[in-house]
Image (cartoon, rainbow, N blue to C red):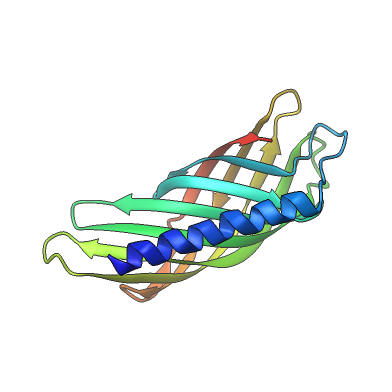
Length: 169
């Protein structure tokens, strides 16, 4: 139960940081391919809620609240990613950029067969494509998020492909 409260507390910190940066600086330009912040869903191996906030025109933080489960286990995790967005030099598509970054996750897990539970902790990388639809307040991201899990089972996972659909504001 304490793990759930800790995870909620961390999620609120990420939201608070995003809000402070939003007040401190407004980076939306008149160009239709940029945006300052967006919120929506992330769908893949783990499903959840994602909030992306740009610190400047190429650096962003992405907070993700993930829910993952199968017949054996459930995991609830809050992730924070620092991302660097770059233009794609060989393709001229308005609103399309690629990004890479790193971060970490903290949450809780529970094995269903034994009812054992504990802290889920990981280091995460990310690389992907980010597309802001020029004529609509919609952002799409397709990324790959490899994960080095420290708990509950240490190891590296390469199955973290996800599609994020966000509302830009």
